[in-house]
Length: 340
Image 1 (cartoon, helix red, strand yellow):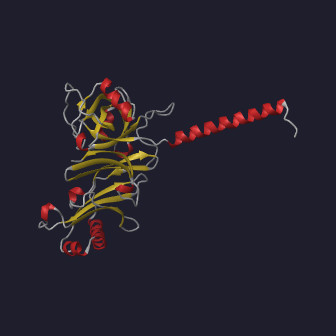
Image 2 (cartoon, helix red, strand yellow):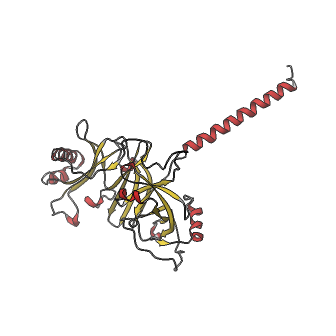
Image 3 (cartoon, helix red, strand yellow):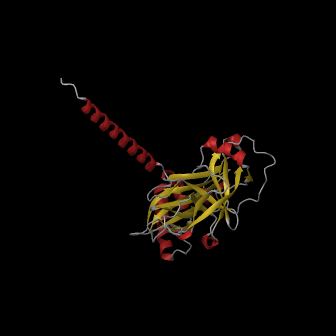
């Protein structure tokens, strides 16, 4: 075998180094691309502020007794926060691996019609729940809407926030995502003929889902239902429906039967997915997820904010909506809540 010359050895080493460098850059790029964008639930605190809990923690009863109590948020489900000092909060930020948030940081608040408002963190807060039974406590902040013009789109109580995105060089602050159509929760009434078709769909689902005894009782009762229209990110219309069959004679305040459904109107109204009960012993409207808002997450994604209040538990969830999936099979972006 002929031994390689020094020049050959040098060239081989250069090629190997170049391949290693290319592989390293490719792997780093791939990892950066795979890191998902984070979103958090935001609740209206008052007229121009929101409260955001960035992560779940265990305070273990260590919140200082001198921590200043503040008024509860307007938005339901965000507990009663207290003000935390930066030195105290940073300890739990490190332990939980939460977003590295601090007073003065900016985030994007996803408002109606695809509008995006910049909020600035002004106060660090936390809330301590009953950790002894396994509940999480939470750390977060109050954020103030920076542009008063954005407040006209700040009409609901539940939203989502993400890390602030700077506008491209030479551009102005993006008030609207660069698409014409956006996800959002509708406010308009649903036509009577559509409601009639939905009632028929609900009764059909009752006949296929319920057991014989429940079905025979429920079929004697017309369903009471609530329809909420919303649009997904491509502008297509959907309906979320909660329904119950209740005679008033059921024990423990339960319903004879209840269900929630995600419905599309085209080509004809039909059910895409059905929600089941998280607590089988509690059958009723209140234990079905309530749809609080629909937000545009950008890049063709739709976020939904739901709330369940059932028995001694409650939860707020931000999920990425997907046609054909119930909540259990949607991607959960964040959830806060407690159980007794």
